[in-house]
Amino acid sequence: MPQRAIPVDCLRTFSTSIYQALGIPDEDASLLADTLVQADLWGHQSHGVMRTFWYAERIKSGAMNAVTRPELVVDGGAVAVIDGHDAVGQVIAAHAMREAILRSRSHGVGAVAVRNSGHFGTAMYFTRIAVLEGCIGFLSTNSSPAMAPWGGRSKFIGANPWSIAAPARRYAPMMLDIANTAVARGKLYMARQRNEPIPEGWAIDQDGRPTTDPVAGIAGNILPFAEHKGYAIATMMDVLSGILSDSQFGPGVVGPYAPSGRSGAGHLAIALNIAAFRPLDEFEADMERLIERIKSVPRADGVEEIYYPGELEARADERNRKDGIVIPNDTIAQLDAAARALGIAALSNYDGIQHFWSDKFRSNLVYGYVDSDNPEFVGGDTFDSIEYVAADLIWAPFKTTTLGVEYVWGRRENTDGEDGDANRFLLSSRFDF
Image (tube, rainbow, N blue to C red; front, side):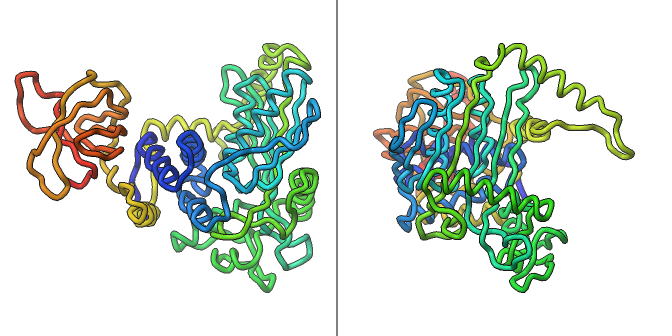
């Protein structure tokens, strides 16, 4: 399938600008965009930027509030309950995990239940927050119906994913992020988008028959992993996430795939302060030994290496930060169309930017620019700094008095100047000179 690599910071800037245009405050827009980009970095494209406008449509319909104001409704020492008031699930989940970490400082453990939240994307994005604070993180959520109770054929139970993450000192954190279905539902949507079949064992159709058609699988049921065991775990995660928090549960939860309808999702965030149980350095030393022993186990035939939970994601992250995130062209086309409808520069405008760095140019330089409808050099302006720099391209997210826009592209002039003109660019509010 045709695809292209997009630099990480460009992708993050694009997604952030979408959410800012929809009224999400800057800091929250940045966090939401970062969760999507991080999912792509980890290789979980089913939870990456392909979901950008799924959340956008819910904001536009009023199903999700753009401004997040978490309310503490129970304050019980190590325990708390937060009401998310139908706002951005990612922002609420981050707030809940930080609250759990704060409470673990005083009590050794912090447990925060969340009601009236929304879909928060990749769970280990938030358990990793606990790891960075010297804690073991746990996060569960319920989700819209994806599977039938074992033996049934009508959707009732969500995939209800959960995550556990722990620090491992010189190794990348050990992290588990798992849905209780055979596969994340987003992978069926990806297969549908790519017009590809799905493997047997992923889903059944509406009549309970096995299917390799992603459309039939979406309309039918995704199968639980490990048969009845996955169904049972999913049900218990609904107890922890939905019923304990006094949120919705079972078929009462609405997912991000639907543009309207209150989500009603609930979560449970737990932080275990490792130092309250034993010295952190001793814990991390044992984590290192565990990982080393896992990786040294004799390998089965045909297996080149054994990986510990989270290692594949860490390697994908390192690779994708260097090479860029590969996005299918049809996904880019969909994002482009939706972005233009908001008056945002299309993602395809970032094509060809493969090597860039964040070093700042000299401050207070004067740049010329071209109008998108008139390619002649028509003026200049002063920028205090440049956010992203490439060999022949700049991205200046600052409002200027001359251009009167917040996002300005700059392309290097092909002229020689007295100052070498290495820092002289033609500017435009759009990168379509």
